[in-house]
Amino acid sequence: MAHATRGGSMVIIGLTFFAALALTIIPLPEWMVSFRPEWLVLVLIYWCMALPNRIGILTAFSLGLCLDILKGGIMGQHALALVVVTFLTLKVYQQIRVYPMWQQALSIMGLIILYQVLVMWVNGIIGIKSSSWNYWLPAISSTLLWPWLYLILRDIRRHFGIR
Image 1 (cartoon, helix red, strand yellow):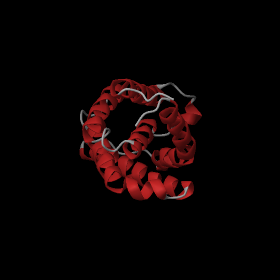
Image 2 (cartoon, rainbow, N blue to C red; image 1 turned 90 degrees about the horizontal axis):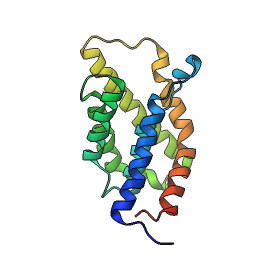
Image 3 (cartoon, helix red, strand yellow; image 1 turned 135 degrees about the horizontal axis):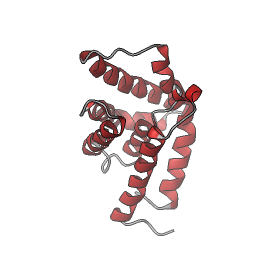
Image 4 (tube, helix red, strand yellow; image 1 turned 180 degrees about the vertical axis):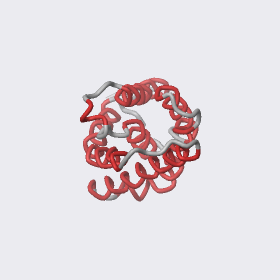
């Protein structure tokens, strides 16, 4: 299998980020909205762990600004949260990568909860309170989704020879 060029691999990675952004805003039935996984956070964590020298803080900040625009939130709110999660991921990715999948998923859950806490913190500063315990449901759905998303993104990375 031929390896993707650096530019070609960035296109593939960019498409996975685009898909994550699309899944973040796609309309869902009312009963499913509370369970929407944190798609962009999951995909960003994966690529940080897989390619820590190519995907980092600048990518997280840029994607966070895109998410701020898409969700119509405070400019920089998601950017801040994604930068912090990316920073921590880059610090511990070597440990997380060797964990068994169930332990890896729990580690990802911790990062997702941190992301949610940071977003909630900024909301609290401007006077927006979270409505209920439903706010935390995406951490559970994201944790359950992680093993499947990990396998899909790993297969994409291997298929296109992204290194």
